[in-house]
Length: 97
Image (tube, helix red, strand yellow):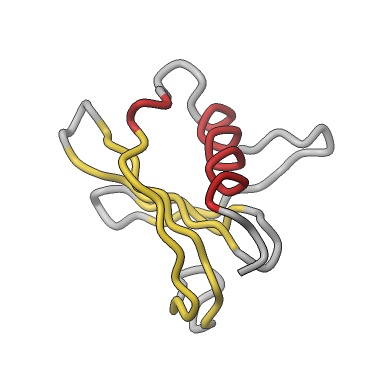
């Protein structure tokens, strides 16, 4: 494990605030866990050490998930209740979109 839970939580808050600044609330983070051998959806077919952050989504009363790489500390993708997975990118100023 390269990153601590605290470091990952800080990164997750930054990513989530950048993605949805109007609606993200820190208290909606439900839990965080580490998986040493996670078969990730992006990049498809790879097994990586990851951190997953569960976020309560109030509008649909469900959980959504942010997955971060333990190798780089960067987000891999965000997954909502409909199983839609999308990649997260970072601009030159360090903001996620």
